[in-house]
Image (cartoon, rainbow over all chains, first blue to last red; front, side, top):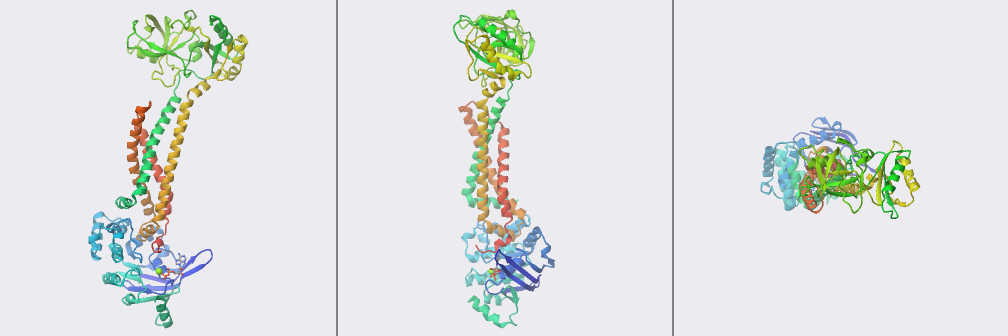
Length: 236
Length: 404
Ligand SMILES: Nc1ncnc2c1ncn2[C@@H]1O[C@H](COP(=O)(O)OP(=O)(O)O)[C@@H](O)[C@H]1O
Ligand SMILES: [Mg+2]
């Protein structure tokens, strides 16, 4: 589903070059639930933005669903984001000017879907996350947990095959985080591939597989136990 | 299109939206009316006089001293002028088109007057008048030299023969055939229409009887006169420069005013329409400035909104918006605001015109101008929002992941 080989991402400014990712290798199979962990600044978000076609990369290869994405133009990338990928951000990223219904509708409109189908999908998605009754509310009128559930509904409404989540529970308390996690697990059981970046070892443990990132590279925890302790101290 | 969510989002930005819409409305109202005034004024400026205006020189002359009668002086002057090498023809008169001062009276069909008169300007002149002016006779004949009479300030101008413009003839005798008919300028003093000229305008530029002119075969025995000269082609400048000396050579007992004493007809025309051209220019500048301010306002607010919404633009891109979707979002948003603005603006424009209709001599705003104004402002809005919208479309989708 998602395969990166020797991938590199360099951020260049006038003074410095930052290797956010270097020789980055990962292979996520269709239907997998992968948790990505690692210390702050290790390149997790960078990996996710490249995986989600939000950003281009500097070197190496990335195949998404069998397609080498570096060949795609901007419109083609937009289309893949719209049809295949669902995003869940740490900061929810709902559009404050739009109510819950209109927020969930955004990706469906970009798909050019008919109004009746849009409405059906929006209500189904809101039903799933238990917020159908809040369709007319604005984001500012909802709690953080509710906002994140709206964001999940927005990601779900387009039935994406790949769900990318960047610390989806990072801004939530434990109670709300658990609710969101249960929702993700349910979505995974229905067949979606999920890649979730998290700081929370408890959540990471609930994924099928953990990938640990340090200094822009994927490391094998079993082979390099000293990183294990390092990773823990980084979060405490 | 995504009109409903755009409107929904605009409801959350009422202040800016209303401000820009109102600015557009006001600009439209003022620009329509101003352009209409420009058009009206330029139309006036472009009006023809019925003369052949090229190669005409007009001289204002004031005899000094009190000789009792000025007729011999006038005749000597005319002789001298007609024999100037560059001059083709000349005559002496009280007024001429675009002079902005002259005589007018009411022409009647009946001897005893009544209320059915038609206002007409009066030009006095001899048999050289038509040729000098270059006015075109379309019926009847010119005056003969034996028909030329004179009158003084104490008398009333009522010659047995007159030449009138077609416009006046048609108004006096709507069933046609004015030639040979009797017409009264003074109660009980009949004049016969012996000739009709195609067109000749009155001295004033803002009357409602612009084409109603009577030429009378008279010399006005007065100290103040206008000599009109038609020069040979290419000789206008030479005559313009030498005519004062020629006249002073004949007789020094006269004053040709320092300013405007001798003028080519181009100068007469320019002076007559100075105010109109000034008004047209002023209104054009007002339009330009208003449009520029409105465009700047739109650029400013759109840029501000784009800056404010970078994050949500990134989110939209992340959720599948193409660059063109973002571009069209901002273009459409502006179009909707501008549309509201022009709807209000059209009402304002018509109201403003209605008010000016009652306050000033102004015509009803033609709908074309409203339409042109609407198109201009919608176009202006789209042009003004384009650069900010383009900048918005270039916001990277990765913006969605950046923390605030
Ligand atoms: N736009 C950018 N420009 C320059 N450096 C960046 C940019 N984005 C991320 N980085 C750098 O890349 C590295 C990885 O960052 P990131 O992927 O955000 O880490 P994480 O999400 O694991 O905390 C960091 O050193 C960060 O400073
Ligand atoms: Mg991060």
